[in-house]
Amino acid sequence: MPEDHIVIANFAQYISQKGQADIILAMHDVLSKHENVTCLLFGEGNLKESYQSLIEHHKLDEHVKLCGFTKEVAKILPNVDILVHPSYSEGLGDILLQAGANKCAVLSSPVGGIPEVIKHKETGVMVAPGDIDGIGESLISLIEAPDERAQYGEALYKLVTSKFGIERMSNAYADLYKTLVFNGADNEHA
Image (tube, rainbow, N blue to C red; front, side, top):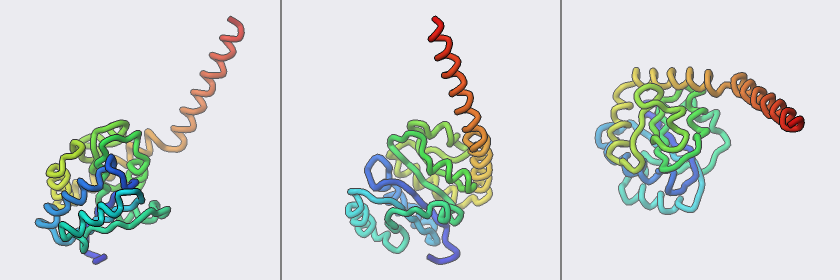
C-alpha cells in the first residue's frame, strides 16, 4: 500500500447486514475524486466470493482489498484514517469503541446501540443504512478534511474513555451487584 494513501477500513463479518457491499459500491465515487485511497475490508463470511466479484466487476481491485479475518485489530487501527461501519443492524459495535481508543474518525449508521457512541458531526459521521451515495459523499468529505477527521477522532476518544473506560465500567458493575445483593436481601425478609 502506498505511503501517501488514505486508509479506509471495515472490521466485520462478511454478511449483508454489515454493509460491506455498500462500502464497495461507494468506493467507485470516492476513487473518481481521490485516487490515493485504499479500502481494507477485514472479516470472514459466506459473502466473500460475492464481494470479491463486486470489487472485480467495478474494477476496484487495486484499491479495495478483502483482507480476511484478523486478530491484529489493535495493531491495524492506529494506521487507519477512517473506520467505516455502515451496518443495517448492530448491538453496540465494539469496533467503534476500539476506533475511539485509537482516535480514529468513524463513518457509521444510526442503528441499534451505535448512536450511544457515534453522535453525528460530533464524534463521527452518520449515514442511513443502504445510502451508498451518502457513504461516498461522506467519505470524500472526510478525506478532504483531515482536521475534521482529527476532531471526530479526539471527540470519540474522550467519549469512549469517559463512558466506556475500564474504571467506569467496573464501577457500574460494582453498583449493579450491590443493588442486586441489597434487593435480594430485602426480598428474603419480605
